[in-house]
Length: 443
Image 1 (cartoon, rainbow, N blue to C red):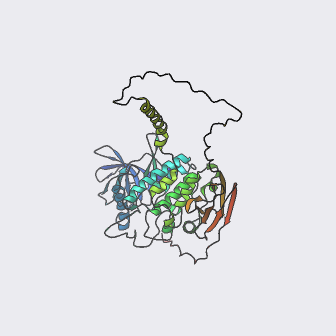
Image 2 (spheres, rainbow, N blue to C red):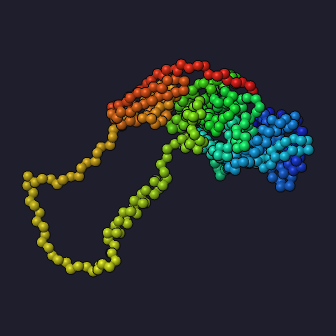
Image 3 (cartoon, helix red, strand yellow):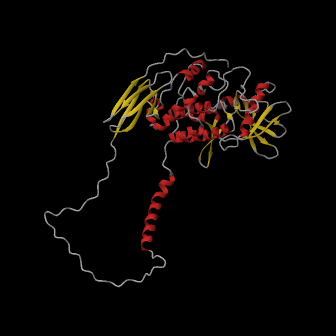
């Protein structure tokens, strides 16, 4: 949404709105952004003295029903969900010139696209931004809203208490479920909506009825770019990008950026989010967020385990020595007893019985799994473990069924009974299937 600084500066020199007062209340101070849906200004409320961001439809578009509806959809979507990581919309109005505008909170920071221009993000920063974005979108999905145009330009990063804080912007082409009318198409024609670099396969094919999993795909693309520095698919034009999103499997992030030391759980989560079939993706943003963060040791177990154990030992000791009520605690007279006579030690004496040793822990071996092409989903005994290339630990000698699956290829099953570290490689065979339906390209 936000154009580069040079473009904004040049446009501001000839902008008639600067200095004007919109709706009788908002005095326009400066131009801060340009996009397909209009221009964004910094404006001051003349009564409150507070600064806001105002998005104004371009001249000549305010009277077009589809443009006005898109701007109003953005306002309705943002106000329907109260969330710390969604930009707040304050008002929608028209001025004396019939210009339609949205009044929003003014954000001080940068969008994710500008940050990505400087290269890939540290893994901790990428995970933090991804989880905050997924939290915002989960709230929108819970309210029946699908963003449908998630991209780095629509993820704005501000500083809050010295840390990154995400604000999700621009629900302009979002879809809101209407219980009375079902899920209507966004437009009268089957136009492709969304940005080709981050578009889901179903949107690339022109499918109008999409659900929240299209946002999961887009966020998967963004996380991929944050940790590798490049999106999974690039092309010389929109048509190439649409085809790749609809048909090609992405390279595993660890192959794209070998120096990043990407954790296996993070790579697996991103690749699952990028599945072509929505049914193979995560069922919710909440589930995707948990997979991104990876396995954690519950804090309660770490912080309370030792104190609770110590308390239990002390309680047990107190129980043994504490006098019971109703029992005479006076000391009994000492009665001398003959000292026991130890048995003489001889060479034939049997040693005292020693406690049995605990059973040794199961010995583990490491098996490296690879497929051609790479990126195949690996399941061990029916449980998903990640995508190739993948290293797993198995109990020595235990029989395990390994299944490799990749869209467009026949699944492969292998039986493993590894007794030492080894590598298993499979070559997947392509499925014989009819050609996919043509991708619509009406923009």
